[in-house]
Amino acid sequence: AHQRGYSFELLASIPDPAPGSPGLYLVNDFEIESLNDSGEVMWGADVSPVQLPVTPAAGEGYWLSKPGGSHRLVTRSDLFDPEGVQFSRSGFMGPGDSNNPGDAGFGWRLLPAPPPAADSRLNSGLYRLNGQTLSLTTLFKTGQPAPPPVNIWQGVSSAINLNNSGDLLFHGIYLTSSGTYTFNALRYGVGLFHASPTNVITPIVLPGDAAPSGGSFNNIRNSWINEAGDIAFGGHTDLDPTCAVLACPESIYLKLNGQPIVSIAHAGDVAPIAPLGSWTYQYAFGPRINKNKDVLFVGQVTNNVTNGRGVF
Image (cartoon, rainbow, N blue to C red; front, side):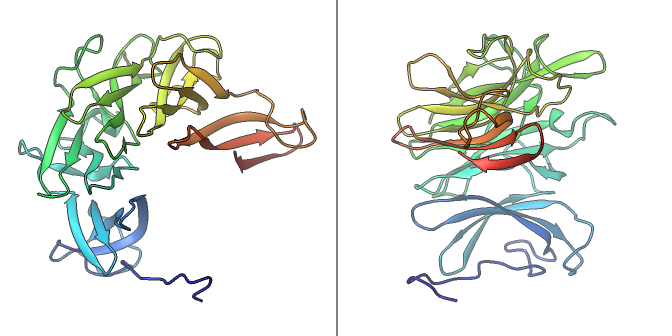
């Protein structure tokens, strides 16, 4: 029903032909990544040569779709990055992001696949799409040099954020004794990094940095930057319940531009649910921050009898 003046437009459906991908069809599910002010949507989906709604995928793809049904393929599995490295059928590490100028940023797993039992992100790359030329730029790939104190990139983790000024936030993987993930006797950590519009990369928060909630950070994920350079992010510390993977349960932190990090909602903190004091956060995740410095996030809460989630 068209209520309150809204109209609805179908952008894509399963199992339609995959735009810009002859012989492939959209299957299984969609992942909505972003929506900019012109109504352009960045989205991902599984693809397959078999035209069935649910079928084993032969990779994934990313598209940008404008109102009216104009679809632009960003990239997909089996295609190649600017240096000729093939995008893996294991797919992207969503969400990616796009901005009002139509540019995009994303991370993708690469071939060859890491050794069996390794996290698939240990061979991956970070990329920008120029929305005007549809050309890709590589920021880095596993094995390439990284700014101090990182030394060598080991991969990129999930969730990329790109603001309208071209500032890109990402979660880089590297070797550090302060990390959470061990494979083949090597310890990996995930830190938060900023890439300028000219792709100068700067560390923001790293494993081993002191956390305002106590202890030290050992894992960062799901970060967001506004136009003023204020950042909300999810972090896990060495005082939180033990985590042995590259994506740990989070608490919410805020770093206003030029200011120290503050804790917004940490595991064990009282959640603002009546009656006051009866609910606490088990963890909180997925923060967003707007130009007014308002922060939005999801909290997993408990009153020691039942658990639930709320938006705060």
